[in-house]
Length: 104
Image (spheres, one colour):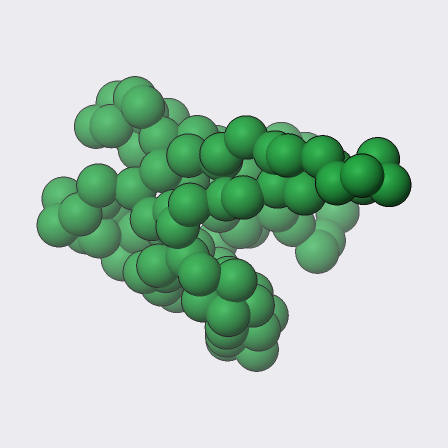
């Protein structure tokens, strides 16, 4: 996943991150599009899903380094999705996001 860094003469640390395979599951179209474009612009490969079921389908098609999950999806709770992803592919790192009051 993330590579090591190197220091310049002025002490600033520069990080070299190899591309990651990212799964982004977010039902908000605008937010999902913005995050996906930012990640692609920074060299990562992104697969997008708008629901928990779409995210689970993508897990069966590809291997991912990181999954970025909305805690509040229309068909599954974020925790249910997290548990199912970990059951299927335990090596994936998970980041949970929410823009609402959620009890995760």
